[in-house]
Length: 362
Image (cartoon, rainbow, N blue to C red):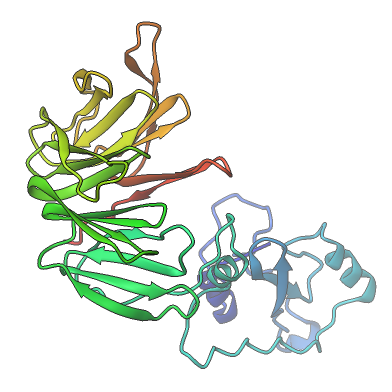
């Protein structure tokens, strides 16, 4: 029977809560009664041994065994039956404590197992430290062994994926609002522009047009969209030969920053801190629907096959589907304990997830 460390401490010291009145069933909290021996000698108290038990999923745990009594925490377990046949072993040595790692790492066995075995399909590799303020975007260009990260400290850091070391720091002259990658290109949203870097050829472009900080981006083979702090969405079309890229449309309608964009076959979806989601027709460039169901800021939208997913600081994830009339309608709402910051998905493995916001410390 697995027990907690606090329970093990109470058992070792012999202190336990009083049993409930009228309860006759044995409990590991209760001290077995020992009759007084004939002749007035001292009563021999039962001893406690803590044996290590390993489970397949959780790693080392502990089990209480009261020696000197036929009652055990797990009377039906195979080891309990074997000990009944052998008799009570009072001389078994206690297991030696597992030495603490020299680096001072105090992770629990469960945490260590999850980090080393990649429970859930992910394996922790290392932590990349260097930004002095919040990280607002990361990008891994196609075919590159370099990871790009941008932050509110106004820098883009380039990391070697083999060594985990920062190999370059580029100052952007202001906060980095977001980052996105497409093929060998890295797009960096800053105040009043989007910087485009080709990691293979070294070409650099500066896309002008935004009037404030670029907070979100989405891209196709032909178009780049950028949502800004002033609630507008900029659209650029990639030319076939020319290196200069000009904005072709400006979509207006949101009242607060556009913090998330996602593209389907025929529509662009935008999520904003004004609590709304807007659907834009990519042929007419008109807003065809506005969704008001979220009760707080919409922080992320994600197209997933024929569905749209959204999350919000109202602690919900919503799944939207198209009706016969072509309008989106909420089909399912999932509730969380805290507000949600972003959605991410991997179509190849059919997996998606979200990042929650931590409650503020008071």
